[in-house]
Image (cartoon, rainbow, N blue to C red):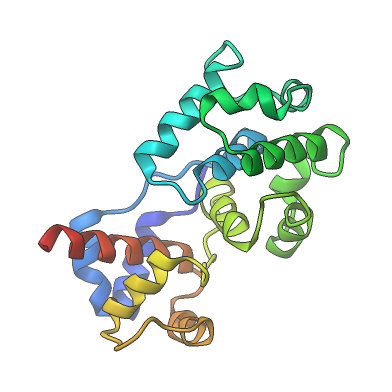
Length: 207
C-alpha cells in the first residue's frame, strides 16, 4: 500500500505549475509499504555514500553470505562478526552498524510493528540511537520504506541541488530556505523531493 501518488502529483502541479513538465516526463514512483523494516533499514545502511550500482553489488554479495540470497533475519545477522561480513565489501563502520541494527531488533528496542504504527517523530526516536543511522537514513526509510507522504529531507544533497535549479537560486538553499519553499507543497513533500532528484537527473542528461 501507499498513498495516492497520482492525486498527489496532480495537486503539486496545480499548486506549482513548474512541477507539470516533471510529472509529464517522469510520472510517479512505484512505492509499496515495506513488509520487512529490518531489511529495508539494513539496505539503507549498505547504500549510504555509495553510487547505486556499487551499492547494489555489495548488497547482493552481503545477502549471498547467508545462503538464501535474501537479507538475513535479525538473530542470524547478530550472530555474525565484522570479519564474516567484510568479504561482501562491507566496511568496518557499516558492519558495526548492521550488527547494532540487528541487536536493536532482537532485544526489542525496535520492532517492525512499532515502526509501522509510529508517527514520524517516534520513528526517528527509535532509529537514531542505532549506530550508522542518522537523519538522512531516517528520512529515506520514512519515504521509501514506510511510504510517508510528507517527508522533506533537507539534508539530502540531491534534493538541495534539485531545488536550487527548480527555483533558479544562485546557491544551494539552506535548510530554512528549503522548509519555506516546500511549505505550500505539504502534505506531499515526499513526492516533491522525488521530483527534485529528477531535476538533477535531467540536468545531467543534457550535459
